[in-house]
Every structure is written in C-alpha cells, then in structure tokens.
Image 1 (cartoon, rainbow, N blue to C red):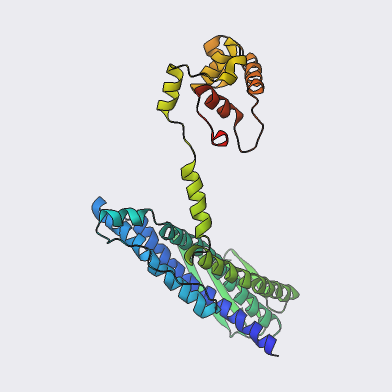
Image 2 (image 1 turned 180 degrees about the vertical axis):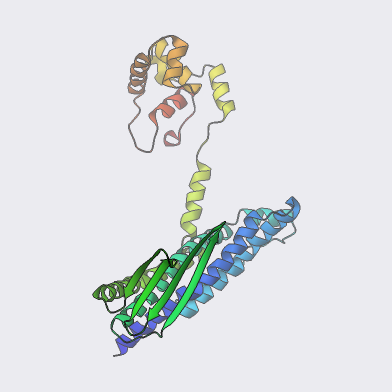
Length: 333
C-alpha cells in the first residue's frame, strides 16, 4: 500500500511540476527573447542584454529551487558567477564569456519547447479521462446549445453545437435552414471508450518521462553537470590551429617546399600549388589546360606519394596543402 501511495504521490508531483513549468517557461522565454532582440536604441539594447546575462544566475537558482521543491531532487544551487562590477570593462567581458549564463539561456529555450509539449500531453490526458468517464456513464453533462457565426466579407457562415442528455450525443451542425450538414458524437460508443483509454495511458507513459527530461535539463544546464563537457569542447574548438592568409602567402612566396615533396613531379607540384590557392579540380584544369580527369589522377598520385592516411576526422587534400606550405598539422606536433 505504501508503494502505491508513493507512486501516486510522485505522479502527482510530476503533473504539478509540468503544469507549473508551462507558465514559468513562457515568462522566462519572453524575458530572454526581449533581452536578446529588444528593439531599443543600441546603447539601451546593449545594457538590457548585459543585464539579461547577469540575472541568468538568479533564474538558474529559481529553477533549481522549484525543481527540488516539487520533485524532491537535490540539485546543487549555483554560486556567484561574476567577480567584477556590472559597469566595468572586465565585468562586460566576464558576462559575455560566462559559459553558465549562455547555458542558462539555452535552458530557457529548451524548457519552453519541452513545457509546451508537456502541457499538450496533460491536456490530452485530461481529455482522455473525461472521455473515459463519459463512455462509462460516470460523468454526465446537462443539455446545452450554442450558436455561432463567422463573417468573412459579405459571406456569413453559421453553425450550432449542442448536447442532448437523453441520447448522450454531441452534435455539430453547419449551414442554414436551406442547406445544413452535421456531425454527431455519441459518448456511449465503444470507440470513445478505446480512445479514452489510449489517451490516458499515453499521458501516464509520457508524463514521467517529460518531467525527468526537464529535471535533467535543470541539473545539466543550470546546476553545472554539463559545464565541464561544454568548457572542454569550447577549449578544443579554440585550440584548433588555423592557417591564416598571411601564412599561405608567405609560404608560397618563399617556395617553402618540404623534403617529403621531392618525389613529386613538376606537374604535381603545380597542381599542389593551385590547390593551396583554393582552386577546385575544375579551376585547376582550366588553369593548366588539362582535363578534370587528369587533375584527379595527379591528385591521387600526390596523396599516395605524401603517404597521407585515410581517416574520417582528417581531410587528406587539406593535409597535402599544409605539407606543401610547410605548416605542421596538429597530429604532426
């Protein structure tokens, strides 16, 4: 009995969490959207954007506390992200390069989309419960009738929606007295019972998964679980060696040929030189007045003589150009 009560309590907490997440995520999304794309004059827009980056720590702690309180998690609150004043150059740089602030902004966008989806799931689940109870005769409605009309220019489109308690039937009628069509829906039909059961089970299956997914977003993007991975990825991205235009120009002007290139023929060196200038096979063929097929054969010979390995993470054509220019790749260092 205790396990059943704990299960029901957890499902109820997840439903409450998802219901609360919808309005909260909408408000946070509006705040972030305004801070990122405000139509204010430039100095004021920059000030609003910097203020947004600053308050993301408060938003992160608010979401962590809300998740811990409703779902009984123990995610760690974040400490102070900034050590420099808001109105200082170091403070501006610190806020612009703060990984936690940008991760929190990413969380707001992800949470908004996920909470909208979760809210739709909850609505369908409630609708399934109503349909199921109605099909079983537990829930009854009183007779009602509602008329409506839609005016489009000079055309008027009329309709009527009503429910008959005696026959337990919804009916939607469209048209006027001359031409009328309708659609009926009987609550006692077996199809409604099946539809209600499917909607309820679908909601019960999705609600815990949606709640756990949103909790993982809070833990990963706000509480700092994903921060080391993100910072390592950014560090690898920043540390990748880039060949500047000056390096290419200097190497080509000095004809800085490597000893490994001694086996290449003059034609192959010409083609490699044109590859270093960024020309495609068609461009090389046009410059040397040869066919593209000949260019492809020469390039294959070049890659073979330079003994460049075939790897998914490396582009052999680029490695050949780097070797021609005398610039070492990361693997050679």
